[in-house]
Image (cartoon, rainbow, N blue to C red; front, side):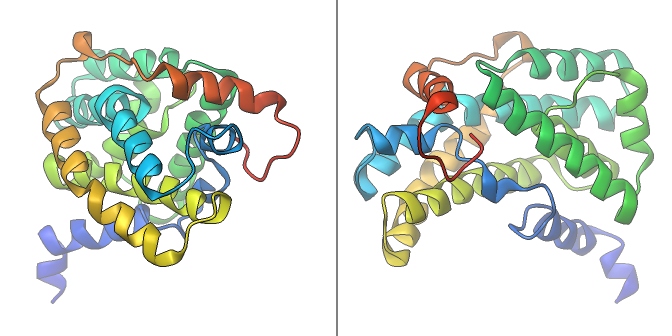
Amino acid sequence: MSDRLAGGDGALLRLLTWLSPSFPVGAFSYSHGLEWSIEVGDVTDRATLVAWIEALLAHGGLGADGVFFARAHDAARADDIAALREVAELASAFQPSRERRLESFSQGAAFVTAIRAAFPTSALDGLTSAWDGPIAYPVAVAVACAGHGAPRGAALAAFLHAGVANLVSAAVRLVPLGQTDGLRAIAALEPAIGLAAIKAEATPLERVSGAALRSDIASMRHETQRTRLFRT
């Protein structure tokens, strides 16, 4: 059994642990601006929630994070310090608002701390030697996955799915949606997650982009929202 866990099964178990809602990065406290979009009526039910998240995967922050994840994984696997620095630097700069920076950097720092404590890997040492600035969450997760031998495709899909599930969980509380509608939303978003993963794997770093402007505005407006349950 120990031999099996040293290979693919071990990588799967680590993915399940690292991307679980219970992993100590505080993902439950962030809504990626969704809280403001619900308050102003952009997201009011399951259909509008699915459309909102589909846009994030195809054109917004979730899709861009997928590209950063894929390219950071490649750089870490190749032990390419220059490429890793380039990814980490661009991911750090690619945050459209103060709260989105908080969301990405706080989770990135917490993830690195937790991995070093329980799942150490020299790949993270390579990341911190390559880049001494704040580490974006997708870069931190991708480097840990590469260091522990988690295949890029599976790890990327799991990362995107976890991001989607977190937003759906926020909407279940905020809209509010019932648990069943939350599950239906996740099921409906599976094709969009798959497409986003395929696109991210094929997108070079210089082609990363973002055009979900309503989501970016939501993250800015959330900073001054009077009543808030979430940090972003």
